[in-house]
Image 1 (cartoon, rainbow, N blue to C red):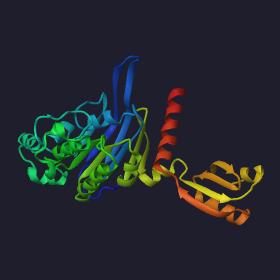
Image 2 (cartoon, rainbow, N blue to C red):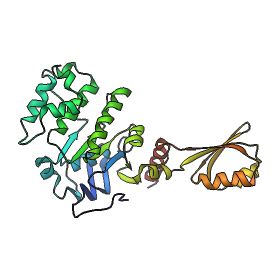
Image 3 (cartoon, helix red, strand yellow):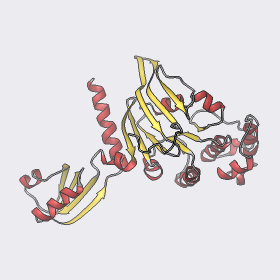
Image 4 (cartoon, rainbow, N blue to C red):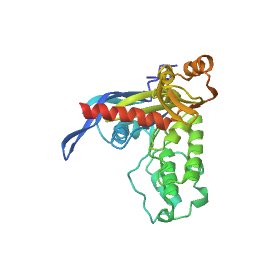
Amino acid sequence: MDITPHTSDRPPMVAVDSVTRSFHGAGGRIVAVDDVSLTVEPGEVVAVLGPNGAGKTTLLDMVLGLNTPERGSIRVDGITPKRAVQGSRVGALLQTGGLLPDLTVAETVRMIAALHRHHTPVEQVMDTAGLTGIAGRRVGKCSGGEQQRVKFALALLPDPALLILDEPTAGMDVSARHEFWQRMHAQADAGTTVLFATHYLEEAEQFARRTVLMGAGRIIADGPTDEVRAQAASAHVTVTWSPTAEQLDGLPAVASSEVIGTQVRMRTDDADTLARHLLTRTDAYGITVTQASLEEAFMTLTGAETTKETQR
């Protein structure tokens, strides 16, 4: 689902068209990305979620030109990924790739800046990444979160139109992750397109305006984060009530229910219809409605995809 309409003749920032990529594995050929199509418009912030082996990193590697599709095509801002990277249109913060531990933070950023024909001033990217206070510290003495911030600064050097982040907050504690995403908010608000993979579901829920769920190399859900959550029964309804089995079976829009004493907890994909029925046709009271989390949608949808894959 494309959720951001074209407002000009500018091409999509990322256009993935029917892409497939496989690798040799111990059990034969393993399909990592299976006929995936994805469009990301300029200015979007998109989270890619999925369990290990879902194909997230392989997909991002192809968008960066680090791998090539066996079938299908990829364009970044209307050109090939390699040309986009060479033209400083793309910045990346990846899981792989190390830093030289004996260099200071400032020396590292200056060294990489020297490789760019044009780049954002070193002091500016260090300030944006929150590195000014540790500029003289050797990289080997930096924490995991601080090293991720160094990589973030390197990704910002070319002043990219597209930022690709693969598990960007790995190794960070909760406060460091919060600070990192505050800084990313500023980049997104300035118009940078952000495409990131994460296993921290709360990051997608709090930061991504759009979520793409992957499972077994395929896209199984794609849309505004709230809508993706809604695809797997979007709410829990809890009431005080002592129903009969027949009354429970007669409730509309209930995916599952649990009775604990005089409390009944139900999962539903239509909370309004269920609440209306409870209030007008039963003696239930004390109704509360809470939205299901993205984690529940993630587990339900990726679990369903895994089940389908094993049945093939």
